[in-house]
Image (cartoon, rainbow, N blue to C red; front, side, top):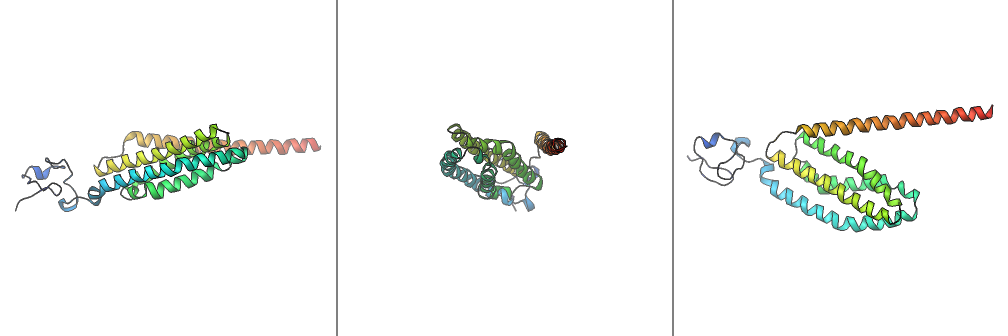
Length: 213
């Protein structure tokens, strides 16, 4: 009985059956029972659908954000309060509609990293970026640029992670370093804000008590 590559159906010699990839089409041979994994079979379609969804989101999202920026700029400082809401809606659309399918095929670690990479991107880029929409005229550029950059960051990192998952490549050291650094900085900033707020509150209370006396 001849052994063939499950992808290109070319015959494999005894030595070729022991390698990880087919020498004819360079695709993996070490799936379960010598068959391709579900990700191997669906990868091209998943990638194509994600690219199409990104373009779709950008097509309707850019003009929508531009109109929103004009509206927000009319209420000035109050518009800053809308930044978290805009960022929340944006990240939900990306996670559910754009990269949701791809993330289902990632391993647990990569799924965790893509989730937190998106969260950190929206925290450090999305919130301040969307807050600029309160600035007349310049806020339009800031809001649209934030929308495009965040969409591409989430899309590109997820697509790159999916490609590495397909080729069975491990997580890279820089991914762990970047994620750990962002997590540490985020915790430090949050603690600083809490401590600073408590200090200001204590100072105000102390000042009020002093003035009363």
